Image (cartoon, rainbow, N blue to C red; front, side, top):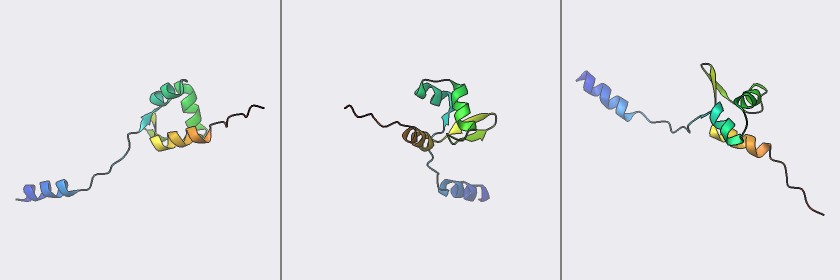
Length: 78
């Protein structure tokens, strides 16, 4: 009976919908650069990240914000 109650409680727990975290390698491929460069961006605080063990992870929203904030405006011809 107690085991059955425990199963019901677990089944009722809300699930957290979290975006998949990006690895340094995935970001490097998307930026066509090296993992060293991505790690440097994280170390310097330009790209927010989370240290998981010995590796860094970045939220997709933080990566998108990084791209937006580092985009140069187009030059007007004239």
